[in-house]
Length: 249
Image (cartoon, rainbow, N blue to C red; front, side, top):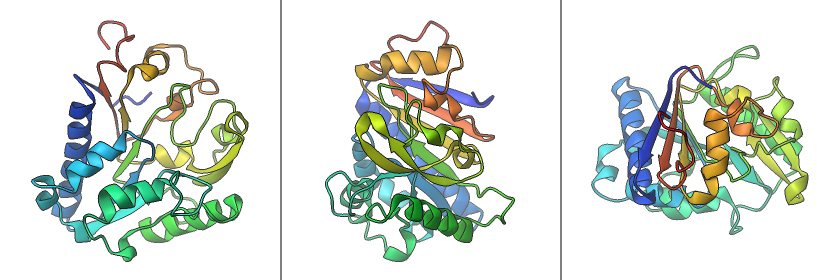
């Protein structure tokens, strides 16, 4: 794991949401103080809904120059953008639409397209917008991600091909255990970020979190262990998710 790992143990999911939203504001303000856009990758699932709502409401919405935020996603389901399972749709409903973010600042994965083609197109878009030539890795300011009870993160699931891809930034990933295909950032792209934040809540994550943070290194079984950015790595977790961590974590 990253040498710059920070674990925030918070009492409940409401506190987790508040911390995740506060991190967004802090990182956005840092980028904007440097007179540049803030480049953030959002995550899917249920946990981000709450902190999205906090960002879209006072007092936090007034603390960010939203015209200088570029929105991306770390992974996407292979569904149309209006599908209830779409990570993009969830972010639109909870964050982007309430803030009236223009389309020019929203960079979604095209889950309705052929997964391999969509992954290649998204990688090209990231390179074009974030910079970095063929031999450089673009650097996000902040990547949010979660963790499943099986230890997956982004759409890097246990024992899937994407875990072993090191020469791509974005890839399609066949997930046999879910009988589906996803589009996902690779660990290579995630690990170039200035900051990666795991946002984790709930008792069903406790076993996996303990293995990821304190168990033997086995990323084929616990893909979250692959995330080791050169920048900062944060685990923002509630006490239910942290319940099986040994003292001192």
